[in-house]
Image 1 (cartoon, rainbow, N blue to C red):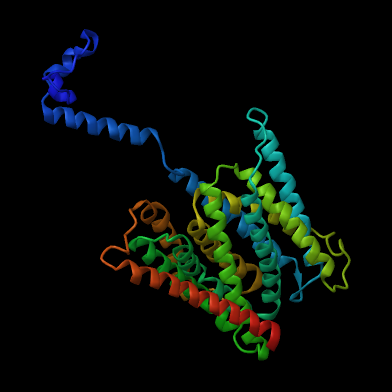
Image 2: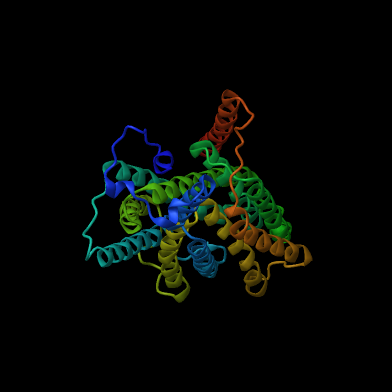
Length: 393
């Protein structure tokens, strides 16, 4: 019986020490042995977690909502008459330097026992490209806030979850399950409903600038989605610590924004207009925002980071209503409730369900063709938007 359980041939010699089995296992039936093996496998799976825990995702999500909400509120308070009374290029440069110093402090504090890590050149090159994209996208945001109606800007940004879902499917072949897809659609619908009052209030006007602004808005959403997806993948799959990756990103970001700051034709000095409380709070919140976004990307992924931004937009509607007089009616209230409930459903239910295999039952060539067709459409639309803004505006 012992040889049959172990799969041994009768002529194989077994030492006495190996021949004996514990007395409690000698009388086990084949079914009991198989059941015990399955239980051992399940216990092994429980001992080796494969990703961030639900508590880590929720903590990163709430931290990002809090920091990003405070930053956007301070950002709006720092505007005077629809314009910025300070040099935006130098402001972004200062925050990049502060974020680099913060990340270096975190890394040096954590490396006292294990030593400093040396990243590879491929990681450095990846973050160079990401830093350039982030720097350009920051300038796009400043331009959009000046030339696009606030309601249109917010409604346009409401489609960010769809952009992220499309980009991560095209680049990484990451699929969402059915409940996640429903959550994305409901989030977009809820945001459009919540922000619809503001858009209708500020509608009208724009003229020739409106077409260029909407082209820039599409380009900005595409860049945001691509950088979020790539950065989340590098943070989650890489072997380098999060703080070292932040140091590389903010080092390149400081250089990119240094070039932008000194290439801008601005009448404002480098530190001009930064001696008031709202602007100082913008710089402080922007510095912490970078750390919060990195944590959300590492522990939650690009979709969780985007859902957090949607929740933050809805929460800020209350402050916009009380401080800036933005319309907040029953339609807005229904949209806010939809986004909050959908975000809870995505984080606590849909995010823990298995992913549906879209490729099952579909020929591989057709599936690959759909992916690349989606990528080509988004790429061509982004290039055309950029060409229109550069050469025809």
